Image (cartoon, rainbow, N blue to C red; front, side, top):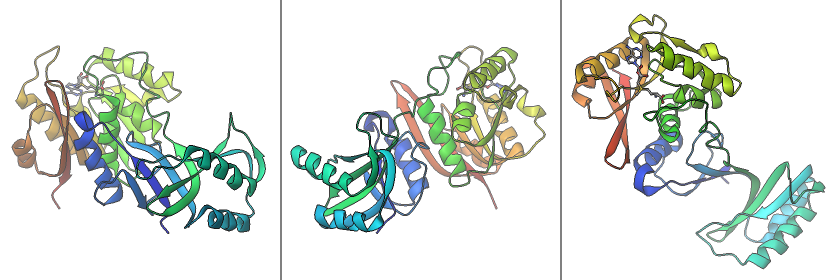
Length: 310
Ligand SMILES: C[S@@+](CC[C@H](N)C(=O)[O-])C[C@H]1O[C@@H](n2cnc3c(N)ncnc32)[C@H](O)[C@@H]1O
């Protein structure tokens, strides 16, 4: 039996390219909406993980599931058992309510239907019943509303995906966003528990970044005012959202110069650009190992995972 079932979903219109690449980086497998695996990823790491079920048992009938659970002698306080509706199998609603109640009978402790501390679920897929701990990624946009934002701030889904591509399974990696603006990437990274810092050449913008992360209880000094050229420390991962001249002109040469600096300060780079700069990135010495896009309206962002040549 696999240990986990993830429900991984996205809006095909804008997000498919990002979601599929992130899925591959997490699970090393072709995409499927209902994905069984032994790979343990925190349910709130990705905006595309909607639900994670940590599996306790699988069985060919609800009766068998109940018998297996009875042997576990489980005890929980304020729990609830639900049927998790999936779009692979239609399941009768009344039957699911009756069975959820029968399953909760074999778990000791107290139930809470309105305010459970723990939610368990069973679901029926391709002839098998699965039971496990249910975690719903309801709070994925908790840092969306912050004191300061920019019209050209990175959408938080792009920020989160860039971090996941950059860090992969190395959650202890040191990460920098050296042109962090108001701190979208830094905030998402801190929320994921990463060791991340940010800096920006613009005094006013970096001040806003500090205010934003402090607002959510993080150390404001994780964002400083600094020109990328003055960074002397070295990092495992750099996330660089290249400026493209919304308020002030920023030439392609200047954009390439920032990527050059990223090469100097980090081993791996996820760079977000508005035109494809593949040739320039290769000339700098990076190999682009994966690439995806995020398009909204006329505007496409290219997200490139770049590794240093061995
Ligand atoms: C596209 S914005 C980043 C937006 C950011 N990701 C956010 O969500 O708010 C690019 C930033 O690069 C900064 N920048 C430009 N040149 C820089 C340099 N030499 N060193 C550090 N930051 C620089 C700009 O001040 C700008 O805030």
